[in-house]
Image 1 (cartoon, rainbow, N blue to C red):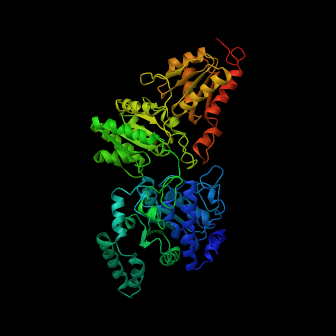
Image 2: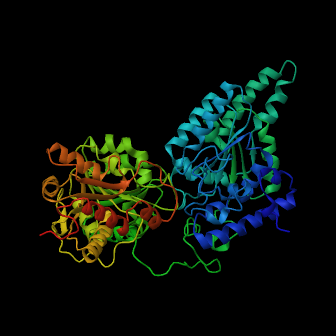
Image 3: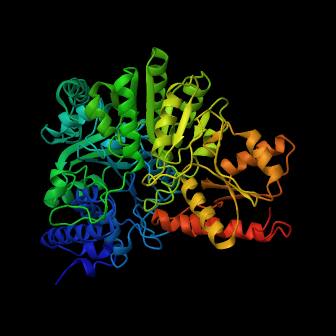
Length: 634
């Protein structure tokens, strides 16, 4: 009889013996492969944490104790063991369960998370709060070796080691972020992986020496000095000792016979402790073991051979970006590229194949990536920084301090701008216009297609001020809009079609659906609309927008961004500053609410940001103007 369907909570895991838990691990892997192959999602990282998750839930009571996952894309086994097995086939689907820990979903998830590096800090906060409030429970963190490149992880370790609170940090070491780990920390941990098991000698020997009458105190002090000297030469985990943690490991994270006794022993010990477990990303699925990068977050695939179930092969914006950057770099040796642990996701892995000495993956360290780019720019190079919109938020101060204030002509390609879909609320890239627009001198632009993306890259690289290019998690429009191209000039929009019955000002990825909506309204309602490709959210084409606001019966702005502080807000501000009419301007954008997970096209449709939704709003505006009415003017 299968075990997994009988696990309704971790209490059921506690009742299993070792053989049953090993059988359960096999069933969890089979279920994850089955569901992810059909629906898509994170796979390789979750395959690597199955036994670790079973052991944690077997030893601890996380309704009382607290379990904090870092990032959380390795927590599918945790979901399967905490009552979410029946809903697991809905993972990352609209209305289904989240692909990350979510506190609205389960009492076993203390935080809704999705970014790296935060878990040690939040867990320490829980622990200090418990002490102040007189509450006794264990706080456990699971953090990957890749997350330790995040500055916030170091800050959390530093504070935890200093305050000496009871905190267990489990280092899940699989030698990977999404791509193989990079940097000095990675090399240090790799050396530890090869070392023999180390179980803090002080714990076993120190108290024995001190118990010897007369000699105990002196020998104990001598042992302190000897132990510290040996650690500096030979002890694995020396870094963590210096940070104030007692280090245990490394141990095999797939060996329940070792994991469970180790966790039971450590559970009873005080102070900050780091347990180092080594795991294999993709464990138990040969295709993922062989290529953990490909199977980190695959779209639906055939589990027999790994081939994609997606039909056709449209060109994604990331691929178009990489192709354009490679073309530019061939003739300009000053062009270099930077990413923060996302060489594949941003398309720069292809750039790296062509220019290995001109591509820099700095790890999960967006702040450093931006500061590093500032130095490269000042040295005379032309850095292009490719970071997801949701992750660039983490480098807000560096964009301000190291780039904008200077100012320096660093070019940023903001990938995954707008709706990212199934990754959910903490990955939706719908805030970047608002957080970048306040910087004086910044150039914010978004292309309508691959051709314009290439032009904007060249434009940005020629600027002596920061330039930001926004691209969506989508494919480039094919065929491209059949309209003559206006020359690309900073702060100048282009009119794609003219008409007297209203104007649509569309930004970036919204140009294509705006064009389709106008085309449909012309056929079905006889409305002759002006459609504008705004191109720039800063500086705006104020002259054109003021004229349209004066001459057109209404103006609709369209963007895949939140309404607050976005492109439409910028248009209203510019018109207000010019004393122009704003009452007939309608801003079509996402409302003031966090956007859940779901397919990109579905979420755009629900927000009225597809061709149907734009046509509906424009039709309503047209009907509200009696004199211009149903498109029979002129």
